[in-house]
Image: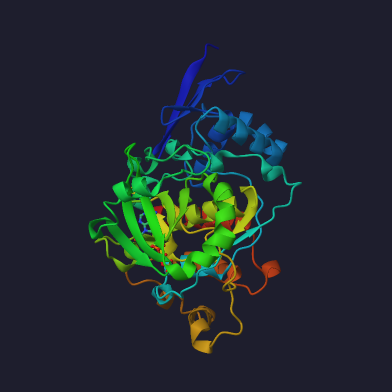
Length: 431
Ligand SMILES: Nc1ncnc2c1ncn2[C@@H]1O[C@H](COP(=O)(O)OP(=O)(O)OP(=O)(O)O)[C@@H](O)[C@H]1O
């Protein structure tokens, strides 16, 4: 029979392909040509979420991909990223290490008790095993990956009542350079009007943060270290700048450069304009996060950490994941900040710390075991979420807080569970 375009709309996604399927058939999602494998993932996802496709929408041709396995998917991803084609949100990754920071973060997303965070500044850069297949890049690590079109996996379907903002996937100004940006002190002074108060955007334990405007129009964040941090920066951070500045992932705040001149130690990063997750949880930005947004944020964080754990040239363990280290873009895309700045400091679980510093996790765990899961939920969360979903969410959080690495799920498993939780959440909100 003559080829024709078979088309189907499922919630916010419009899928088409030229039928009958043959070599060269064109697949699109929301008008964007995509690889067949991505199309199949979308199809499978929507079917799993209750979409019914007509007879003309056979997915028989999809089966073969799932038989070929992970390696094939990775090769596809690399090819996709090289060609700057639409990229899959799923990168099949193997990660080790999750931690209580992650628990605190995603409990912080659901639970008011986690909003008061512990101060800690510690990160690790560890040697990475060299025989990993993940040495190759994937779609998750493309510097231009913010450019991806709406993903069928991320676009919240309309029944969730949290329509996806198209701008979430709009291009954000992001630096494409690899390697550090070398700025002179006079350039920094010009960019910040000599560190004027009007440029100040925040202050943390490390020092004051300024907004800077570079000559080429790029807006950056400039962290000015307090003197007490100089030694750490000299001995540990400096050598990592080359490595860290090459890291490009849409869920990681890009490190652009480092200045070590005279009495100044400055860290220059991408500027992310929509504040920290902390601000949004506190309502300081005037809006409240709904459950779907919270899920998407934690999935973004999971993707960022997955990259650090498995794809970076050397494994990087953040060790200070908390809501004030998660910055949000205008389209509510989350970016993890402050990875790689320092080492030493606190472990994810501090067995020797005073009892009251650990009490939050224990308190939450007790409530959970008593079946009082709603008491763990942030009163600012706008909708009542199904108890089963919450239980899954907290159960995963507690797994992440297990004291030993062996007991904690790896980031790949965490990511999968989060996706599954999000699917159930969306399905239930349609019922
Ligand atoms: N890249 C950035 N883009 C936009 N704003 C930023 C950026 N980095 C930091 N900020 C702002 O500066 C504030 C202070 O950041 P900083 O990382 O120094 O401290 P913190 O993470 O809040 O605390 P601490 O590092 O002491 O744990 C942040 O809360 C945020 O509002």
